[in-house]
Image (tube, rainbow, N blue to C red; front, side, top):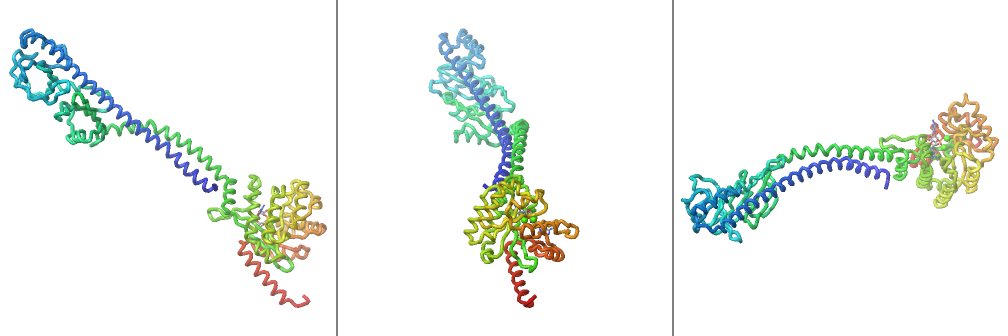
Amino acid sequence: MTNRRLRSLVTAILILAVLLPIALSIWFARSHANEQFNDELETYTASARARVEMVIEQAREALLVLNTLQTTPCSPEHLLALRRLAYTHRYVQEVIWMDGLSPRCSSLESSSRQQPFPPPDAVTEKGFRAWYTSRTDLDMSYEMVAIGLDRYAVIIDPLTFIDVVPFSSNPINLALIGTTSNHIIASTSTLSPDIWQTVREEHSISFTRHGNRYEILPLLNAKLMIVAWASLAPLEKAWRDQLLLWMPFGIVISLLAAAFILRLLGRLQSPRYRLIDALNNRDLTINYQPVVELKSGRAIGAEALVRWPQPDGTWLSPDVFIPMAEQTGTINQLSAYVIERVFEEMSDWLRQHPDKHIAINLAAQDLSSTVLLERLTRLCAGAGVATRQIVIEMTERSVVDPDITGPILTRYRQAGFRVSIDDFGTGYSSLSYLQELEVDILKIDKSFVMALERKQVTSHIIEIARTLKLEMVAEGVENPQQEAWLCRHGVQYGQGWHYSKALSAQAFMRWAEENLASREDETLLAPPHA
Ligand code: C2E
Ligand code: CA
Ligand code: CA
């Protein structure tokens, strides 16, 4: 994976790492509030069920006891027994003795004037009957539930079925429905008819409608159904409260994750990673600066100089990134890349001009093994380029240990490559190594060319090269005066802005064609004995 892709991936992970904990905290807050809300509703429904069952059980038990009474119906003893029973059963309001469906006497009156009961609204499998009525013998209309077995009936206030105190933080409503006659026996507030419709048609046990949450609990044996419902409005507030609780966790985790990933991203954006990335993406380009024969001005070759284009359109100087590549151990990769690009771009030109060369800068680490030598030899053979057309440039500083570098340079020369000492005169090493090392060319550093008049040392450097019978290339030739001075002092070759700046491969080849053509013209025009 390239560094660029890795960066996109890490950035995506960063966005996720920031968003995820916050999203999760929102989700936790929401689900926690929801869960609490539903739990409360369910618990409340369950306690309502327990209450309904308890009331029914009491009525059932009272009816079973009543049916064991042996006394004469409506006699004083019988009436006393009825009263006692009503008195001792909390939920029973009245106990009635019936002749068929006609009440005859009750715990409240010795002789009843009540109308006969209508056919029951519901009959259970065990023979219990139930009526929902608002008729009483007390000259008042009041919704009542009557549960009967054989000749007895007990009257129960329907509100006792739903008299359950909610212990939740939200108000909860409750309704008890008789499923046989679809009669709302009791409810704490009005139950919308369409809800009742839904309950009957869809048999759902839990649903949300009109901003309310509904929970349905059928009591099949009793032919009853409990409906509990609560408004969702308080849920919003509970959700916000939960958010206040969870959000700080989410934010802290987001910040920690972001800090960690930013550190990682920082490392990926470090110069080393960026350089490796640029190499893998082949972002680095090579420019070629012509090297000319001072006497004739004819191009004899070029020096390959690497360039690193930046996203903002500028170029990073090799003076900045070459030392960095040397320090971070990427220089071998960089040198291999430069060599590969030089052969891609220049092998045709070199084949067409067998007397021309390309100089390639190598670093100290490149010269500690023969890996590059083997690579260069292979490339030359593959491209049909003579090894003498490649010049290795190395600085004095590259020769850290002449015992190691010396034999490797010898191998280069044996293979046919030429070796040039770059920036000559700026290194600190003694001149003695020059005698030990086998080199072909000395490149006089541009600092010695710039102020020729003031730097008498330049003529001494030239002297050394002459003594060692080395060819000389003067760097940084910027004007004709410098050119003339160097020529006078026997320097054969030069390189500098006076001739050309470093050019792209195409531009260099065009420049070289023009240069060679114009020199040919000069030769043709020159007088025969000039
Ligand atoms: P260098 O090998 O001494 O390269 C010559 C430098 O002088 C180049 O700078 C060139 O653009 C500059 N120059 C050429 N003519 C003139 C002139 O007339 N006046 C002045 N003032 N400067 C001139 P550049 O391209 O910035 O390269 C800087 C250094 O980076 C090079 O110095 C070389 O040491 C290193 N370098 C460049 N390319 C490579 C490479 O592919 N591999 C390695 N290992 N080092 C490289
Ligand atoms: Ca150089
Ligand atoms: Ca140089």
